[in-house]
Length: 131
Image (cartoon, rainbow, N blue to C red):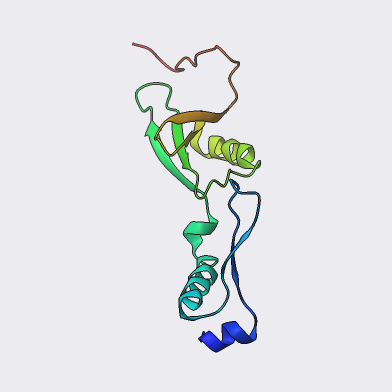
């Protein structure tokens, strides 16, 4: 895509910072703006920007066999409300409890949800044969 295509189609880039009360037009026309607009257009097709970053963090193989997933938000975007259904499906596949934690910028973890849901204050006890 050339600089004239961006000019002909009147492309521009905006910055929507939730900390500010206004939207900033960050690129309109010119060589520097061309590169900014091109990067922002290509970022829309980058799968890592579209899919949430959820990773297996821990598996309690010797205890209750629960699996803990870790969610790292990108650009301050929260998970969709459908994550409860995803946990339910993972529980069906895994066969044991599933936990989802969110990690903030400082590295601290916060429990978002568990499936099956456990009453507050209760502790899961391992099931199975104890020798």
